[in-house]
Amino acid sequence: MHVLQRVDILHDVGESLNAEIDRGQIEGGFVQGMGWLTCEELRWSEQGRLLTDAPSTYKIPSVGEVPKDFRVRLFHRELPRTTDVIFGSKAVGEPPLCLGLSVREALRDAVAAFGPDSRHVRFRYSATPEAIFTAIRALAG
Image (cartoon, rainbow, N blue to C red; front, side):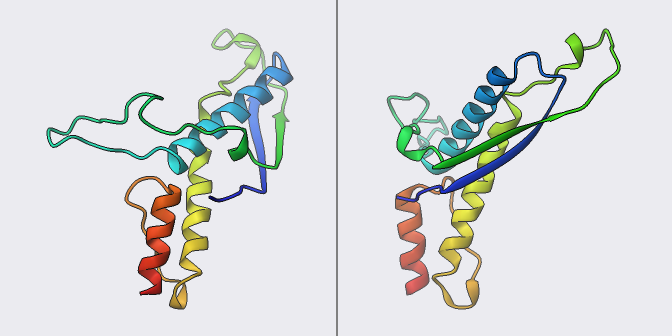
């Protein structure tokens, strides 16, 4: 099992309507994305149907997977008032989901350090503990 020591996120929220809700949405989106790319194993049927399509069929992140030091800052800037968006606000929950890729890539780099010349390591899908173990064994020969 890996331990995520620290995460720093600076997120452009436009003009925040509620900073605490925004921080919670950013943290939740990040943890969801991290879980998707480090806990969930994608399994497919021979017909191409996703078999791991519900929380009962895959592991979801728990409090143990949350970064030990989780820093979220909101990037504030004054925006001209417009009728296109409410008070110049922006989406905050969905974009951090993509940041989970940074955890997967950091794990890939850490596994590569086990091999000679820091070879490129590929995870088929998610960097689950099993996938990490398999990749390290493959590098060790």
